[in-house]
Length: 35
Image (cartoon, rainbow, N blue to C red; front, side, top):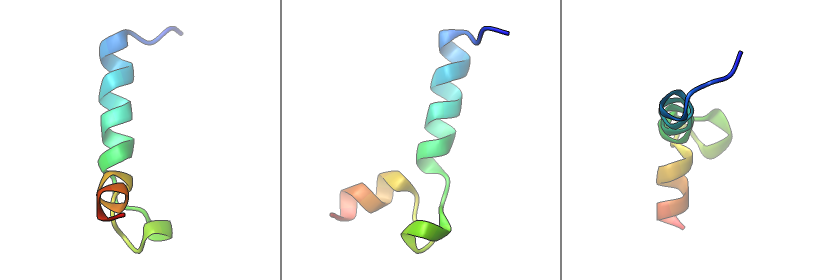
């Protein structure tokens, strides 16, 4: 099954804003902004 560009963008956004245990429960986006 091929994903549409919109589906890819949605999933990418979800992954980048999802808090991760690895980053002390911060999202990758927050982790990178914090430096």
